[in-house]
Amino acid sequence: MGTILGAFMAVWDIQITNASLREIQAALGATLEEGLGIYTAYLVAENIF
Image (cartoon, rainbow, N blue to C red; front, side):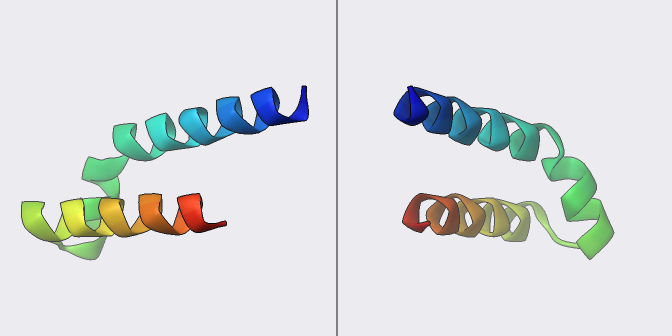
């Protein structure tokens, strides 16, 4: 049960981050490529932990 809950939370967190990518990008003053780099780095860090 814990594994299923952990997987659900990971997918949910990714969806929240994806939905707020424009706001994160605007707050940092990042270009589209930089925003995608930030998003990719976040996903890699999340998968490592």
